[in-house]
Image (cartoon, rainbow, N blue to C red; front, side):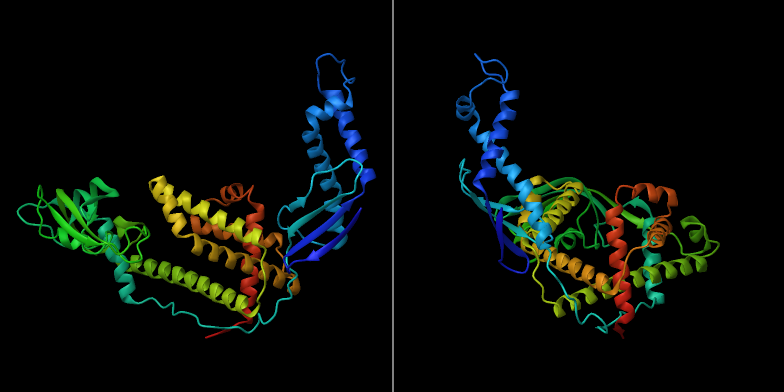
Length: 422
């Protein structure tokens, strides 16, 4: 076998192969001999069918088996000799195999790039303020009040901000019904901003049992592009109006919320939880900024197949999430289509990030130890409030995911220690 390797780019190679005609013939003979022992042809005893008849009926099948055999023999040998690291199956190029002739073909393959990372230490980063104010705590207390609110029917007045309304609606644009723009028994807190601008405001003043028209406009960046920026008319029927009666913020309220002796104890827990969440979010942003800086300083090519694979994974995850929200299939596919460029961009960034972090880990000798895995599981158990054994069992068949996650975090924490954070 003769071969040479063309470098199409740093991440794509073309392997040109010439497989000798003598060996091609041997493989074809063996394939027909195997076939003769297994097929049944009327008029012939098992294993006695003539080669000419087998060729007439099974030539394509045999040549396919021979091609597969040649690839299995040649490809791993070449990859090993050249020290290539394929990241996807190769694309085949060549003519049909001819018995007795040398078989010339090519294999185009995406390979992992050889990266020498640089300028990843001493990166300047800005850390967001994570201090918790009295206003932050008050805001969380207000949310808890709403969660524990009692509701009573509103009589003798129209809808006001803060009321919870049950209603039917149907939307129209230029007199035409909006696809999937109709619902019954929807619930909405007026002033919560859950609906498009103008909708909730348009319901203020309407009363129970009343029907009317509400004008509203879809935002320019609305996820369904066919609706973005358009004016709409909604025919609305009010079925119920309830007002929230908030509990007093006192020690009794704290005891109702959870295992707290006093309102001050509840406030302290809220402050602690907010601080932890803000610190975690701050660290995530530092990690993102750090990765963005490293990608900027290290211009690398990435294999197209890796990006497409990551983009497909992200699209599938988005589909699952939208499906869980009850979104119709047609609308999901429209949304996925409109997000295609963003999904591909995110996928390319993730692939670049993964390759660069792996290269830095190798250069700095950073690896995942068993104690790192143990710490990860312990942190997951504490965060989720679930037993450690249950966490270990859940991740039992996800070892590669856990290892990759722990390694990425370990590398990023190492780089944060080297960064200039202000």
